[in-house]
Image 1 (cartoon, helix red, strand yellow):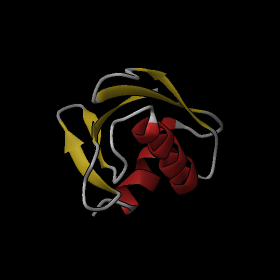
Image 2 (tube, rainbow, N blue to C red):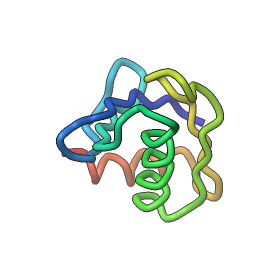
Image 3 (cartoon, rainbow, N blue to C red):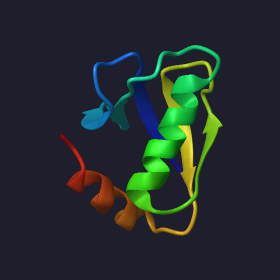
Length: 84
């Protein structure tokens, strides 16, 4: 489990480093009808190559994400390689 700070409606989709104790992710999708949430889960699942689930914060920029099948160290190492 980890926190993600989402910036919806950005010009491009990217992992942008940290925002306090959360991973900052910029998404091109708008925050309407769950589009940004869907894109967030898809982007993280593609980067990590495993199952990702949004478990909290569906209507907030600060979201709680659960990653299955990877250690926390492996998750952070993989995400660190993809920071722009």
